[in-house]
Amino acid sequence: MSNQFISLFNAGTHRNILLPDFGAGSVAVQANQHLIIHGNEGMILDPGGHKVYSRVLAATSQQLQGAKLKYLFFSHQDPDIVAAANGWLMTTDAEGYISSLWTRFVPHFGIDHLVIDRLKPIPDEGMVLMLGGAKLIILPAHFLHSPGNFHVYDPTSRILYSGDLGASIGADYDEVTDFDAHLKHMEGFHRRYMSANVAMRRWAAAARKLDIEMIAPQHGALFRGRAMVERFIAWAEALPCGVDLFTDPIVIPE
Ligand code: FE
Image 1 (tube, rainbow, N blue to C red):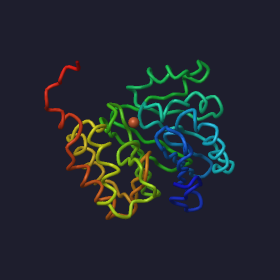
Image 2: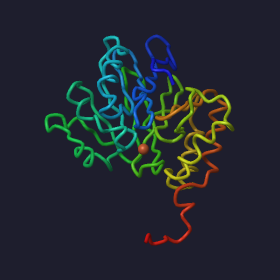
Image 3: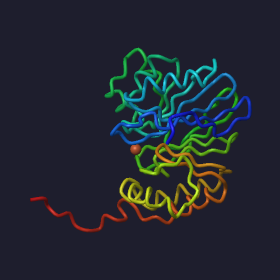
């Protein structure tokens, strides 16, 4: 992946920007950072850890073009998402949103007491956040893979930000063009990290109620266009994963 900005949607007052691969060359898993900017307010999604913090912060300030960072969105509690939360809270006035299951765990990453009240809980049923007058839907995606897990659906751009769902490892392109060829980059991860097919089916039913033009995961390539979006949803919906596959007895290591 190239280390540059990719505009996913631009309608003047509303922009969706992908900052891919700011951790390139590291042993850390490749991660995408996403920005949504509406009017004079912005949100960064899954801003990443310490290794990328300063570069992502600089890129974000540049892309905001004077708009104010209003929200930090954390899809779940993993270190590639929340490790730099303190830096973001200390250097901006943004509010951080994460599942209510994790608000008492994230402070272990070292959140300063001065900013801890700006880390806000998302209730299990999700919520709506307003960004510069535009609506953003915080969609429950629990157990995909975290027990407290959310996606962001942006009705203006029709992009669904899916966090670890749809993540791919080792694909050297930004966008999926051949779904079947792409499966080898997704299958192992989803089978082992996603919790159960029942969670996939619940999510798929909810996703089909939304008008989705693009699914943008936190790792790897994105899915563009209705046909590709539906292929991904149908694949996820049918995938046995997690506890579905954990049927053999545990063999005691010796
Ligand atoms: Fe994760």
